[in-house]
Length: 333
Image (cartoon, rainbow, N blue to C red):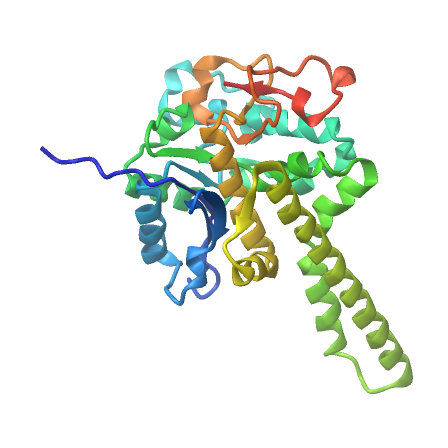
């Protein structure tokens, strides 16, 4: 009789990367574990080992098999209507409304969450992407299979131990920051923690300028803007790490791990995934769905798990006008 592997008290967060142009896209992996009675975080991918391609998935799977919970920044399926077209065509409705094929119920619930947090409605596409556009979904499914789970098990939230869940770190970040910030400050922090693309664009434009007085002045202005953006995104990331410590008493293992977390938005998002895994085990994170969700569709499309810091029973979306705070949004257990 094959013995089950003992589950260690640690929680894994995965910012799953696709293969880049060279086929070497590297995932970021964060771990929250109990050390001498305290919970600390570190990054296994800080080592020199490769965390890309099949070997990278195998390394992540090895950690996931003995963790309590693993949370992955990636959907594991498409909308129920899309899946029905593929796997049960006899019951497919062939709806002419393209929205039913682009968006899952959990995606719509997360859009409602953004509105509850006062994010402009027209910016929701910037934070929430249709699974139809998620090119890494195949790697997420491959990872689940290597760990030993089917798509249906992950979607149903029925993987038991070790638990294996989907999350959306940017929305989780919005919820976590909403307990320290609100309004424009919250929106700005959620945007800025990841605004490295603007910094790269500003610095890159400087290298293409000719040696004229006007171009030098513009280069200097871009350099100042880039410096300000770097300062702003590091501030936003620092606020996140401070919140994680204050809310959940989870600290960096050492200063090197803290610096590594601040280094890239991928590392921050992996850490937030680990926080969601940590909270899920404590009944403080749940799948986000709207009140009109059809339970039988869960097997088809799954749901993103996000923090619910109030804990307790699920609270469903009522009407958009009634949304008072992140904790009042569409939760499902």
